[in-house]
Length: 301
Image (tube, rainbow, N blue to C red; front, side, top):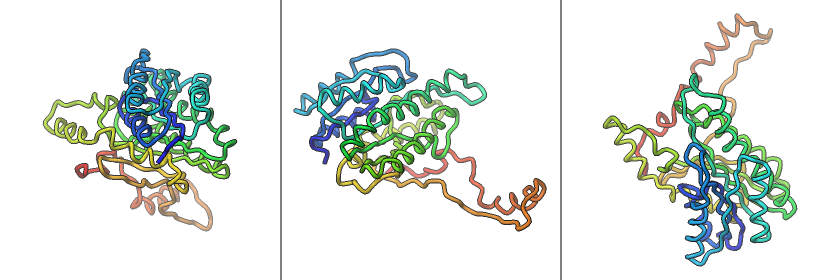
């Protein structure tokens, strides 16, 4: 489906990114495997993971090169795109998958913990996308696939930094889709449910927690790859500005914010009438303080 397309996959040294890179290569793409080889929290560097995925692709007669530049720096992100141009002469798709975690309850979260996560997820998606955008514009085609999360779309405990970044990515993707549609450039999001080292630290102290983790282990990173490959292909040339979720064998189209209900007062509002009339009238349509697990309550299929 993506034969001879040049695809950049960030955070592709393991987990979801690795499986997307391998799937892209199996479907004929030339792949830039980007990964700095850091820990889940973003510390350290190791060129090994990216090169190992490149070696896997080449062993299967595919084409791939490694990149160990960081997405969180604009110049380094430009070098990632430069690697694709130097190795393969063009770029057709960017999969913004790189990420780190610094989970902490909000009242305990440090500025550094917030900043580090925003830098990799949100700034990283912006930096790499921006570096590719002019090339997409000039060639009149291109596709962005960004990884968002139900932690941002719905909510979760202890992830204010991650959730803010992931919801920001949804808005970034929609803006790219709007701004670049006239150049035949598409932008979509995937919220993946998958067992990987990014969620491998979930507590397993109680029987319920152990059962939950066992269910999550069914949702392998490879389940995310088919949608990512399809969105990169010309077959999906009319799909842009959308947010999908993948959970095992399920694919969901996620909602986007729209007005739910309104109230009107011809003479205008005062703080008192807002409190006495507007908010009570709207209260029946308020959204609960849901977490992702409160919404996706059934077993993965």
